Length: 108
Image (cartoon, rainbow, N blue to C red; front, top):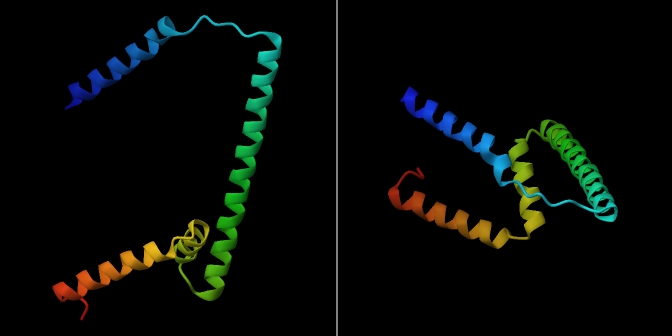
């Protein structure tokens, strides 16, 4: 088994080493370069804002969950259901699960 992982690393490193062989030799003009730089910087900013908002939401959910003695996962699930507006699908899946559990007799 150790040889298998060694071979995978070897093959992966060969792909990485040989990757430059397949790289494009395209060059970008000043306007294209500026556009790409702007897009990448704006993308980084947006993704950082998303990460910050997610962390804030996580902290808020945790605080409210502790205050109300509810599991944070339950609140997060409610948030996702509200976002997707798919309560019917979730309820149907829960009904199917409830029927299955009752059918096999483990609901008692």
